[in-house]
Length: 257
Image 1 (tube, rainbow, N blue to C red):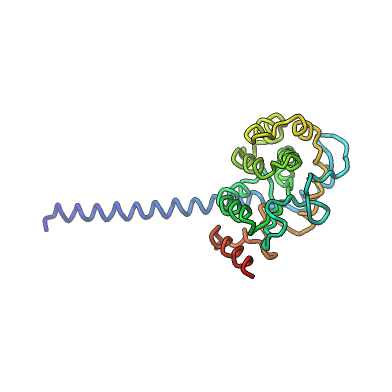
Image 2 (image 1 turned 90 degrees about the vertical axis):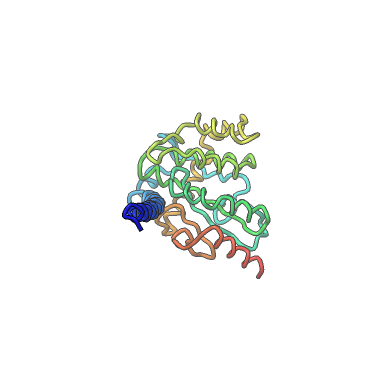
């Protein structure tokens, strides 16, 4: 074999090795970003409980009002917004914050599977809304987005608006969801949602105190970050081996029993 051919083969092997190393690095960076997002959404209990206690039921200086649960809310104190059939044999409990990047990462990865399982009657998802990032970074976007989602629930459009919020989530440090106008603009992406009743609900903060009550329940439950995703009482989001396919199998197994 000529020296030129040997050099050519060696160069090809080196390029292949470099490509493999680059692929590994990319995958490692992807995992790091997801973990990093999770860390950013971790609850500093003492600090945030203090913020919630000081601001519970208030909206930019407004007075506290009664906790008005959205239509169809279920569970203890009516703090869960259900998606899926009540008779489903499997239930997933999700604690989430619409400003939380880790929540968006979970939604992006699991949404098709959750929609499929809910639509086929195999799974019910109980969503609990919290205002974690408001306490960590300031602003009111978590609260206002959660209130708007509850207003969408009143209109029977929760899941669609829920998905729109995550699809248009701003950077965690950007309090864009603190704008009623922005939330109403996004409601225009859901057919039939942008109505006078919805706009009034958003602007009045009809469900703000309910969101604060849900956040207090989150803190009292000892949960330390969002998303907290419970299946059979265990936080599957904390299980780094969990995948949408594995969750689907667990749900299907539950439906066989």
